Length: 219
Ligand SMILES: [Zn+2]
Image (cartoon, rainbow, N blue to C red; front, side, top):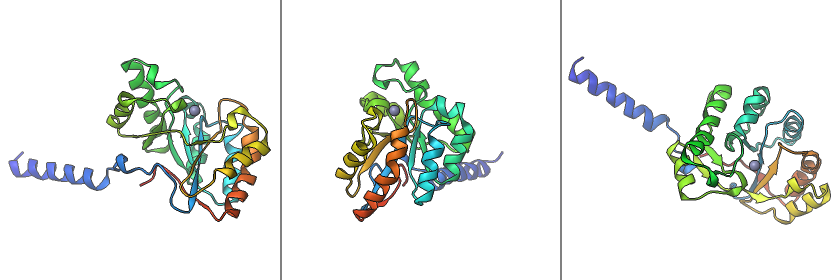
C-alpha cells in the first residue's frame, strides 16, 4: 500500500469520527427553557413500563429512560417498545450498585456491560449514565467519561419510590415544576403503581402551568 493510500484512509477515518461521533460532553443535563423533562429509572419492567409508555403516547410526550442493564437484558422487547415510541434510552449501570463502593474491575463492568446490552437490542450505545443513588465521585465520573458517556446526576426527586400516595406525588411534583426542571420517577424494581396513577395528573398539571416537555441526554 502506498503512502498516499494510507494517508487517504487515515484522513477518511479521522473525518468519519469528527462528523459522526456524538460528543457526549455536550449532552444536555436540564430540560429546554419552558419545559420539564420526565425521566424514569430502574426499568424496564413488564408490569409498569408499558403502562407508562401508553400514558406518554396519549399525551404525545417524549421522555428519557435510564435502564438497569440486567433489566434491559431480561426484557429486550420492552426496550424496543421504549425506542419505538421515540424515548431516549440511557444507562443506569448493570446491577444498580453504589458505584463509589466498587473496585476498579467491578466499576468497569457496571459501566461497560449495559453499553453492550443496550447496543445489542437497539443498535446504538447509551450516551449518558445516571449513577444509582446519585452516588458518584471524581473517579467514577471520569471512568464513565472514558467509556464515552456523560455522567448524569439524579433528577429532582419525586419520592415516588416511597409510595406516599398518588396525591402527594402529584402535589410535590407540581410544586416543583418550573422551566428546566428534570423530574426523577421509577418504572422498576419495586411496586410502581402510584407512579403510573400519578402520571396523567402530573402531566396535565404541568401543562396547566404553561410548561412543555423535553428530553435530556440529547445534544
Ligand atoms: Zn435507580
